[in-house]
Amino acid sequence: MSDTAASDDGETAVDAEEVRHVADLARVRLADDEVDEFAAQFGDILEYFAALDEVPETEREEELVNVMRPDEIEEGLTQEEALANAEETEDGFFVGPKVS
Image (tube, rainbow, N blue to C red; front, top):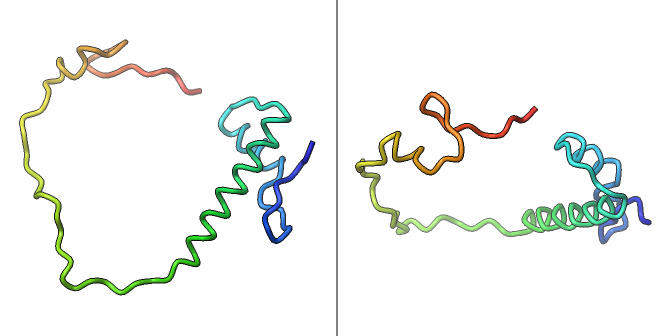
């Protein structure tokens, strides 16, 4: 079992303790093999972000125009319609699972 994920330059990108810490914060239990798997995946993700730093900046196209339509106010759902398919509601609001 590897305890770390190494980047191409041999440095540790994400170690198992960091993965366990994040899992604890998220209240997720991970098996040791899952910790190794996530450490490797987090390392890969950080490498992808690092690659973005190498993308050269480009100058802005002056003739570029916004192709989005303007925001327009339209009729929406009533509160009762919005809550109609909700699993649980209370006092006119959605009720979600407790995060504790």
